[in-house]
Length: 455
Image 1 (cartoon, helix red, strand yellow):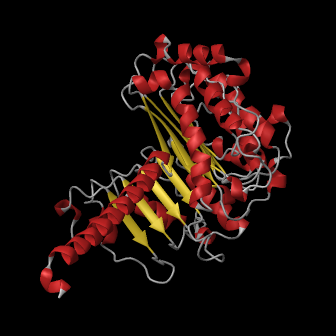
Image 2 (cartoon, one colour):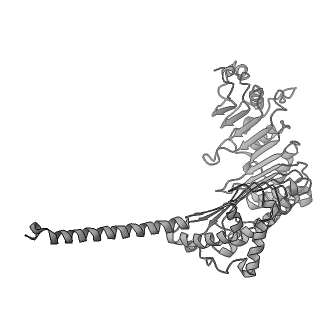
Image 3 (cartoon, rainbow, N blue to C red):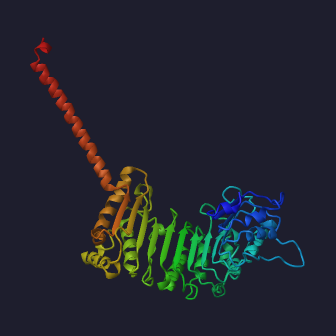
């Protein structure tokens, strides 16, 4: 169907095409130009005769600004030798975002993106589009921090960088990510506004965080989003580098998200000590952790995190704590050691309430802050034992925000609901016993007054 009849189509998805075997129709590219509304082109598991053919496909879409290359065959992405090297023409300055991924890594280990030469071809093809501002990369496509630096050099306008690893397997040779001199490492001239690290191994994540932990690199950093699942390596240094980045970002930072997606490692011993004092423009906060089943640790995480916030711009904060069931944790005694504020006396609780009532928190919308406690289940009784003291303590600790309807505390399972269920069961049993007793009494009374029955 001609594209002029589909003006609302914004995404074109081509999957499993192989133009090394069968070439497209001679009129294909001419009709493709009619899809003027298409802004995103997604290519999955595709083969092209050469790079010129792929460029022609890209250039045929006049409104294109985002390109997705997912599991394509990079072995053929090289120009046919000619006296004049073909370069991108029509869309060279229009492509704003590129996503590169080994789309087959979870399904077919022998996918197109395999050899280092094929990967080099793909990366080289992308460097022709120097106008891009958003780049999302599969970490598997990079063999070292030097490779990334070389790639970033071609994108002077880059503002958003996302790197994603594999949460299940370590397909990255992390040894190549730690062979660098810190002075040589900090040669990037990119001023990012958004940094996303998803399932990046600790060693590589440390290198990346140090790469941008400079006043120049952080001067425009508005968003940091980290999902981490590697409990090995120099994790303390990684957290420190992240804290350095927070400090250097200062007033520029608006959104911060950190997810610890691992059931082992140092964050199970104690939570990170985030300090947002320098981030006076912080708007959104999202933190997901797996703390030990100790009230002291949980309270310490929440108190230090909230107390460090100085931004009057905060609009939303969500903190998720997946607490280990004490019956499945041999390393910790649940809720031992008291709690952090009680150890310092009741005045410490009053001081924390003063912080919650500070002027920079006056603009918080209703229910804009959420604290969720999730107890991983082994038995229902065990999870209730985990949740009940936490919920009780948080109700007292955050009383000012609860009174203002700023905060919602949710637990799974909910202690109140469980208690209500138990009460309902008791009431039903009581009603059942009453009915049985009433019925028995009625029969007894009938036996006494009915002469026919006596007969």
